[in-house]
Length: 605
Image 1 (tube, helix red, strand yellow):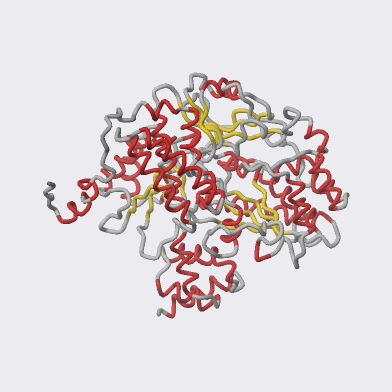
Image 2: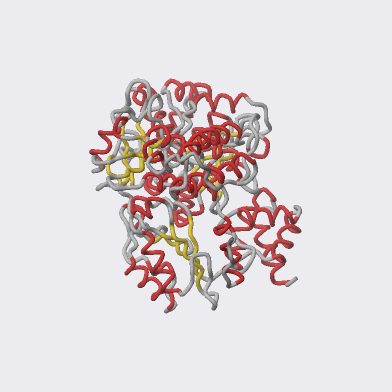
C-alpha cells in the first residue's frame, strides 16, 4: 500500500474525527481525491475508522456516484426520466454516443469520458438535462451536445460549459449555475418571505417554552409536506418525550422523485427560512444538532449553503447560546448524498447519515423513538421546516387561515411535462387540478400524474378534484401528459425507475417490481391476455402490502392507478381470446444475449 495514499486517507479521516458514522463524507472526499475508491483505499479507510472493511466496500458499491474502479476524468450523466424523454432526450443521448464513439454505460478507450444514464436530477422544468461531473447542464439539444463534447475534448473544464447564469442566487459567486428558478406563482408562506429578517421567527420561538412552540405548530395544523402528511407538531412531541441521551433534527432534502424540483428552488432562494425552521425544531425537541441531507445531484449548491450557515453562525443564530438563548447550543451540518433514490425514505436517509448503505430500517421503532445513532430524531422535509419559520414569525392563526379550511397553508408544486409554463407554483391548498392546468398552460391534458411516479395518474373526469390532504395529496410533483402521449409507456418508464432504485433488501420489492414490469412489457408488446390484468392486480396488491418500506409500498401505484383510471389503455392491447394458450416463455428472446456474445445465431425448432 502506498505510504502517500495512507497519509491522504488518514488526513481525510482526521478531518471527520475518525468517526465511522461520517463515512459518507470520508468516502466522498477520498473519491474526489483519487477518482475512485480502490481496494487499498478501502483498507486504509477501514483501518483509520476502526470499522470492518466490508462496511466501506458495501457503502461504495451501494451509491451510484461512488466507484470502486477507475472512472473517467469526465462523467456525463444523462437524465433519462419520462419528462426528458418527452422533450426529445433520446436525440441528445444519441448525439453524445455518436460524438464520443461509445454507448451509454461505457468509457472511452483513453479513459477521458464515461457516459451514464441517471434518474431525475431535479431539472424537469428545463429538460433535457445532464450532470457533467457536478456541473448541471440544462435545456440540451443535439447541437448543444456536439458543442459540449467538442469543448470537453479541447480540454475545457466542465464548469466552463456554463455560458450564462440563471436568475436569483443561481448567479451567486458560490453557485454560478445555468439553472433557472422558474418560480411561476409566489405564495404567502415561502416565496413572499423575501423581506423577512433572519432570526425573527427563531427569537419569537425562544421567547416561548418548547412545549408552547410545539403547541403553536399543532394549532397551525401544519402537516408534513413530503407526501405522508403526518402532523409536524405531533412528530416533535413524540420526539421530545422519547427517552434518549441526545436528539437530532434532520432535514430531508433528497427530493429524488422524478418530476420534483421545488426543494431545489427553496434551497437556492430561501435557505435562511429552512435553517431557521431547523433551529426552531431543535429548540422544540431539545436537540443540539441538525443535519441537512442534501442529494448528491445538488452538490453545486453545497458551497453556497455552507456559506449561509457560516453567516448565521457569525450572526449568533447558530452555535453556543443560539440567538442569545442561554444554554441553547444548536448547530447544523450538511450531509451529502451520493445518488440513491431510496434515501428519500426517512429510515434509509438516517442509515446514510450514519455512514452506512441507505438501507431502510424496520419500523417500529420509529425515528421519533430511535432514529439517528439510536436516539430520538425528528425528520422533516424542506418545505415543512420553512412553514415552521413563518408560523413562529406570523402566528399559527395567520397560517391556518390559508388553504381550504381542512388543509392549512400553501403547497409548493413542481409542474412539468406537456405545458407552456413549467416551474414551481406556491398555491393555497384547495385549488382544483383544472385550475392548476390552466395556470400552467396544460388545459388540453389527457392525464396528470399527481405525486410523482409513486402517486396517482388521473384523467379528465378527476380534474375537478382539489389539491389537498383530503383529496389529491401530493409531495409536490405534477406531471402533465398531453394529447398523443402513450400512457402505458409512461407507466413502463416509472416501473423501470422503481426496479432500478429498489435497495434489494426485501423480496416483494426486489422481485415483485420486476415481475410487474415484465407483465407490463408483455402487454405493451401486444402479447397480453385478459388474465394478465387480473395477475397484475393481485401482484401490485401483494407488493404494496408486503414491502418493507415506502418505496416498495408505493412503487406499484403507476400500474394500480392506471388500471383503475385508464383500463381501456390496457384492454386495447390485449390479444383476442382464441381459446388457445399463449407461450409464457420466448426461447429466442431468452438466448439473444448469448447469441450476441458467441457471434452466431442459434437454430430453433
